[in-house]
Image (tube, rainbow, N blue to C red; front, side, top):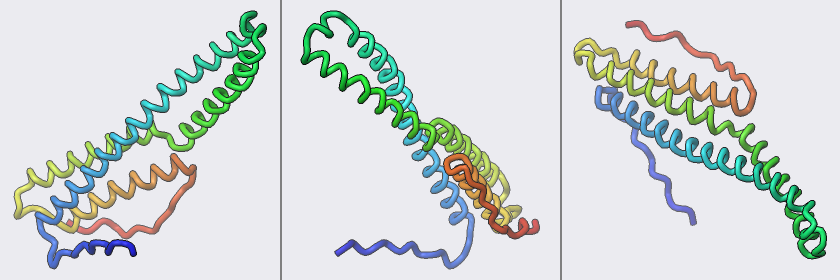
Length: 168
C-alpha cells in the first residue's frame, strides 16, 4: 500500500510570511532545477565530444593493417564503431529534445528574477505592500517560464486565458 500523501494546509490568511514562503520555495526550486540541468548539460556535452572523437579514432584504427590481419579484432572494431556512432546519434537527439543548456540558462535567469522581486518586496515598507499584486507578480513569473519551457522543449504554443493584473 502506498504511503499517504502529506496534505499541504492552505493558510487561513494571506500575509507577508506566506508571500515570502512562496518566493523562497520557488527560488529554491529554480536553483535546484538549474543545478540538475547544468549537470545534465555538462555530462551531455562532455560525452558527445568524447564519443565523437572515439568513433573517429576507432573507425581510423579499424583500417589499420594489424586490425585487418586479426579476425577477432576486425570483428570487434566492425561492431564497436557503429555502436558508438549510434550512441552519439541518440545522445544528440536527446540533447536537442531536452534542451539542457537552454533550460539551465532559463532556470538561473528565473531564480535570479524571483530573488530580485523578493528583495524588492522585502525593501517595501510593510504598510505599502500589496499582497494580491505581489502574488500575481510571482505567479506570472513562474507561468511565463513554464510557458517558455514548453514552447522550447515541445515546440508548442500555450495560450491560457489570464485575468487582468490586480489594481494597486
